[in-house]
Image (cartoon, rainbow, N blue to C red; front, side, top):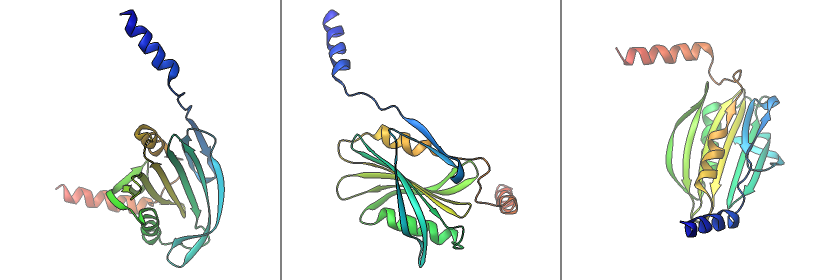
Length: 186
């Protein structure tokens, strides 16, 4: 019994320290997300949000434990971005050179988008989600490189939240969706 206690103690002492994940709230942009360290902020001057539509954008990112955790926000408030084309452009950009393994509708509160998993030739895997709300594109990506942690990948991906006042469907659109669903179940 004592032998096992020494082995367990040696493993615990010799193991790398776990990250202290912290939520970062970006109130002006209406979202919050958890990172394993202070995120790096980068401006993207010419972000093609939709075909032929270039808007300002920025990203927050952290490299940690053979992973890359990144959220990009493109501000289309002055560009009249079409939602469907903007989301499809983001999916094309994220999946370039890879193979989409999973692609399905996703929702956080009242924000509807797409969630996917993309396998890349370098044996990395990216779990991503794309949302379009308040004339902004929100693109969250967590990439696990060989030797990285699936737990970190999912923890980051699932930490995204939106302010309850942010929505990408009007009340009339939601009422129409609910009515259609009600007719389908009759």
